[in-house]
Amino acid sequence: MSKRLTLLTVALVFAPVQLSIAANTPTVSATVSGYTAIGVGAIPTSDWVPITVTRNDGPLHSEASGSGGSFTSVPIGIGLNSYIFTSASAAGFASASPGVLRLYGSDLAIAQPAIIGPNLPPAPNTNTVYTNIQVGASFTDYLTVDVVGQAIGTPVQVPLQYAVEVVSDTALGYPTYSAHPITVSASFMIPGLGPQNFSTESNLFFFNRTTLPNGNGFYSIRSSPILVDSHVGDVLTISAAFGISGQANITDFNRQNQFGAFADGRNTAGIWLGDLPAGMVITSASGHDYTIDPTAIAASVPEPESYAMLLAGLGLLGFVARRRKQKAA
Image (cartoon, rainbow, N blue to C red):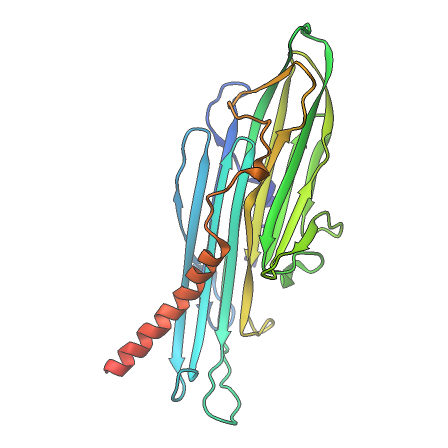
């Protein structure tokens, strides 16, 4: 029984939102999906609870966000730590515009045992927890090449670049996908170059990693300018796809107190133009200015800490409410 969409499905295969059926019309797509479940043993698909997803689409912009989760707490003894506490949470955000893709994905599974007394072993938590988050975004656009004073058909070279940037609180890398609660992928299509596919689960690790002051990892890929052989009057097709796939499960084969992570692609994945030769003018079908490096643009995705507080809060609020109800009784 598969509880996880494949990485290829998340990042590269989802169908784009068609803005028009006309030729050379830009397309954008943003998708978020996921589920959570708490039970005992193998949890049937009928008990998986989909996260709630909302959309905020506009002209040449696709956006989706969603979150969900549940908790249980069972009293074992006396005191704050005398509860068997179980929680499942997942959240995601995806935004797609021509040239710029932004994502966020997180999952968190908790099966906390209870401490029933001093010098006594904790009461085990045998609950099963499933969490799953799938986030994807893509765009396709068309660039028309012109050079002032040059005739149509004159050979030219167009410089293009691509980049992807992600922050995560877990170590992203190969091997064993099942041991990693979050995976990131990206794909870029540049004319004459073919697909450039990258995944943190690949045995060829293309991402550069820098440790941030707060301990999180900053993962990035940034190409040098790629010179595309073209002609004045040509229309170049470019596209990119960006995906985050997450699954944090606690089962009898993966018994632990807490498991989960986030990946924050606020900084972006995108394509832009390098330094253009004198007189060269590139016009996009979408109207987007590809001379701007998208990684330099501030994003409006919630801070990772905001989502982390949301996920933790789902369980904490329920725990406090349960305690207050019992005290009142």
